[in-house]
Amino acid sequence: MARLGILADMSATVAAPPPRRIGTGRFVLRIRGKEPPEPTLLDVTSFLYDFNLLYEISRLALDPRYEQYRFSRYTYFRKGRPLAPSDRLRILRLRHESPIDLITAVEATAGISASIWALVQTFDKIVNFRLNRRKLRAEVEKAEADSVIALRSLWDTSIDGRLEQRNARSATEKVAARLKSSPVQVDDFDIDYVDDGPATDKER
Image 1 (cartoon, one colour):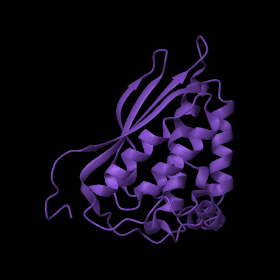
Image 2 (image 1 turned 180 degrees about the vertical axis):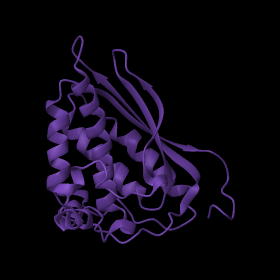
Image 3 (image 1 turned 60 degrees about the vertical axis):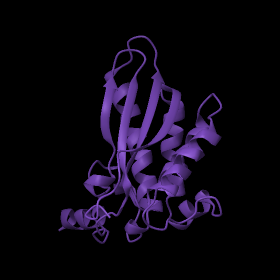
Image 4 (image 1 turned 45 degrees about the horizontal axis):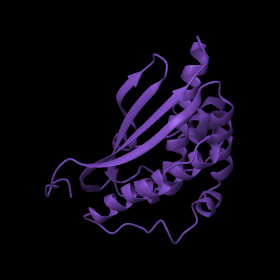
């Protein structure tokens, strides 16, 4: 009986409706790490897991399609974040030699823009270099300009406030702190919006 209760908590969300594409574009995220000589396998896998976890928590908190999801301790479990397959990061490149170089992509569906900007804000707080926020913001605005549907504006609302409202701010801060203290340090972070071509009626 207890296990049934745990499973119920872990999947405490109404199934999200199918995502609506923003044209046929996608966001490409690149993160490069700076690690010590011969890092442990745990150091590297934890770094990659926490990067993905930070994105997925932001997505669940800020995408209106997941507004019924309840954050709990099960959010940190591998199967505790019921994102649609199209909303998960896909690996385009992973180089494990020093320096670690990870390139991922995710479909530009409605609800993603706030999640992407939340990542920008978080990394701006934890990295030891200045992010090119103007360039990163331009990439998000490019996606909005290419949108076939109306998107909620990012610039007139507080990302932190929305995370707080969804009881997700402490979760993002916890993961951000783990990334900041990781032996594998973020050495570069960049985002590009790539338009793969005109959207078809089916994709819209």
